[in-house]
Length: 309
Image (cartoon, rainbow, N blue to C red; front, top):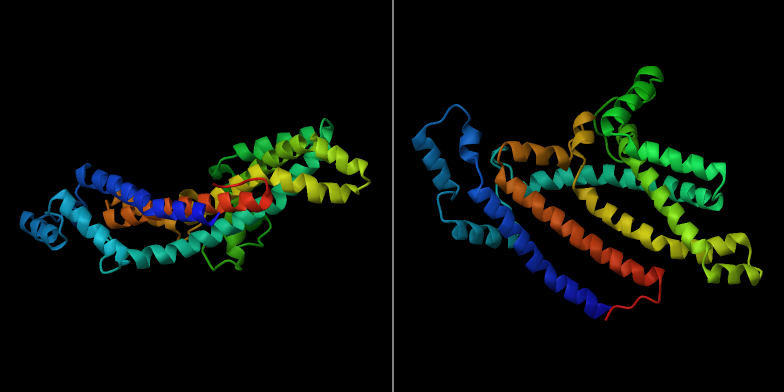
């Protein structure tokens, strides 16, 4: 197991260098000049040339890429083009913390509600409860954000008046409830359907019938034999959900006025803020590498039969 993790970690720098190279090349050879976008209509060719020279944007591609990688290794991700005087690492660090809290709240909501709902549907397989739950999950999973968000605003703010309409106050603030619901409702539906299908498959296995024949209680059968084996595909989805904690939710963050990484990313794309775009891309790559590694390690604990050579 240790050798497998070490090999995975050794491949991580290669992956990050590849992602950085592709992203850097797209920004270098793609349309648009970040300096001209930054200066807008107040463009003086001499000033543009001076700014480009100050930021090293007039150098060859490989030179710029090498300088960026050298600085990134030491933790220096550059300075934002749009937010002058602010480091990219500082900007992203503050925004990632906000998006991670919102994503964690939505993920917890999806897990806490989704797995029990899926278990209930599996235990009522073929009955009206099963049909009703599956139909409801399909409905909630298909609802887009621009329908659920206004509905929740009207319900909790306009009609009931019990929640604030926008803003951010942290994980334990009431302002996280509505955006977490908007993000978590589709997750509840998805996890419920996946849990139901996985549990139904496990319930048909021979070792479940054997456990019941040995006289184990239904609770022991579900806890020790059914849920643990049914969790493998669910754990895969949850592991990938961990990676999305740092990617943000652009529409939800914009709709509820949350200063997360999603809003920063969309602003960076429109303003050609290449240092922020590069850092955001590398952050996503690292998040998915770590999430995949956590999932692979988790498989070993969920099912001891799984071995990594």
